[in-house]
Image (cartoon, rainbow, N blue to C red):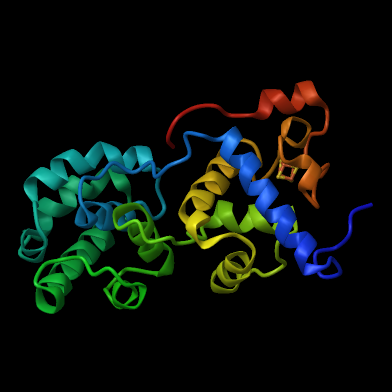
Length: 237
Ligand code: SF4
């Protein structure tokens, strides 16, 4: 029987979380941001567009988008209908076009068209939440950030690192466990593991390389062969 996270000595939990992170680094050496971008602005826009859709769909529209709107001023002055047409394949394209234009306007008005490098400044931009801000900080600026999306939250609760549901509390709990320099890479590893192995409905526990450190091992498919068949190895989604 496993010990609950609440009763476990903090040092043991800390060691276990770091051990799990090291193993995930071995299992998912290719874990990275799956959105295509060449600048902080491009990553900021791509992350906003990734809401409610897949990275693949975003990557399909961004070459055209980035060529047509090379800077914040171009988004600020965009023709709404033209922009909506480009964004249509990503879904919710009217709301996304509105967000991107508002983002461009705010960047021009407040930051001379540049993307700010601080969490506080980023989350004050229209349409930018904490998750998006941490993606930009981590992947465009090299500032460590924890990106708590649906996979991240599910994984750390299953692993027993926290019982929190609120993303900000989850972020704080994990920040206490894992070295700051690892935050961005850990986020990608957890997201990869959630997409490939620890699925929302049927986790592939029997084929999971971190099962020995997981409080929830056995909640999914335990048979090694059947579990292996559930593991996805494909690229970006
Ligand atoms: S052992 Fe199961 S629940 Fe735990 S991380 Fe692996 S797949 Fe997810």
